[in-house]
Amino acid sequence: MKYQIPATIHKEGKWYVALAVGLGVASQGKTVQQAENNLVEAVELYLEDQDPDTVFQITEKPLFTFIKASGGKKTAFR
Image: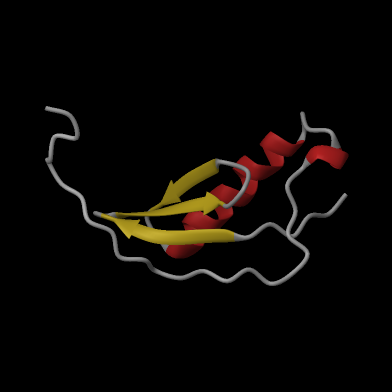
């Protein structure tokens, strides 16, 4: 069975990190193409053990955006 799975790729230091959104499968590479190829391999290994009816799929083109959030070393409870 063929799947169309949304993925993101971003740079962390010297590496590109690829994430299959909704599956929780990630990989990395020294180039964008290597990260993508490694992610495809990781996803295919993951899918070998999955029931096709339970695999997360998006039928519409996904929308990705950036959000702004505050964070840091604040202590939530005092």
